[in-house]
Image (cartoon, rainbow, N blue to C red; front, side, top):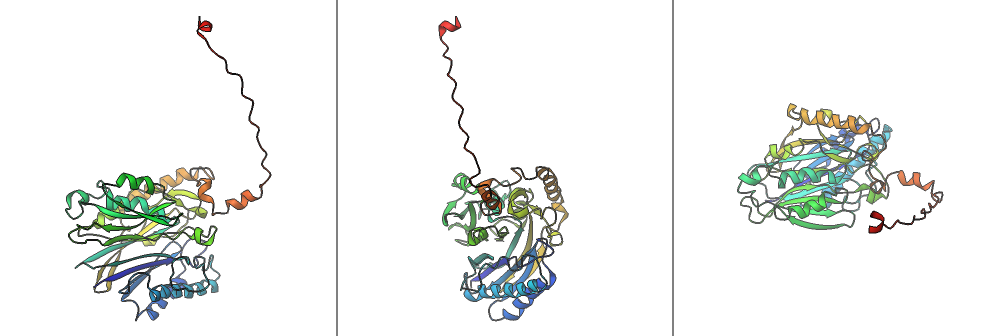
Length: 385
């Protein structure tokens, strides 16, 4: 029997600025889901990272289900009312529409869903990021499912040896393309290295996978808030679902992809590059320069529609080195202030407040005349002699 994992997240107000969720707000969301989900979900878990509330839902209704999406939307709306009551900053900022219209996609909250054929044991990890964009998942998802130096199972596990299929979205043109790895690895890297435009949406097993033929094994939220709202309304703060073990990356191989705090776009005002720091839930609040960008990993096992867990996967001294490296990178970058490459290039700041600054000086730039070219000296053999 098929099962569906739906993960929907939103920023509906935080304390004091963009630091962390407020207990009364997240409790309202939890209570709403608990009271209203009995006939819709088989299980659920509500968590957060930074200022984003995250709802993981298990059901058998398939992806894009009206009632599942409305449940999440209504829960966020209920939480928003509490946020407004306390005057929280950015109350309801990710709810870009006034009312639910049948599908939560394009309405602000981020959505990652997969319909699966559960295995005898179905372990998976929910990765939740704050202060960055959907393309921040490109690097680790590639490492997990296509890099044998990160995932030796690609070499020594027969079920992984033939590779995986990646679904890549062009979020500017709203198009998609599929790549098979390892044979199309270089072509895919040519695109996903441009993480502000080309993002990995899903990963699938290949048809000859013995244990999971043609199964969706990873999915990322790809909702671009700036494209929906037409201006900067906060970074997209993506989340992802990654299935693990039994012909897929082991839990340790999946987590290893975050052992190097690679640079992502976002951070302060969505306008700066910074290191992605893996942290436990207790450290999932955004402080220094509204960051730095962080990722939390929650490990679950699904059985008969019920969740066991979670395990707070990055709450481990094994990732202290990654955190130390990230903080050293933070010190280095912050000394650059508003200069690139710490600040994003102008083309990536189209939806921030920078265009409003430039608008003040529109028409005030003066044309610079090119200096007259000097006559070139012609050198002949006679001159040399």
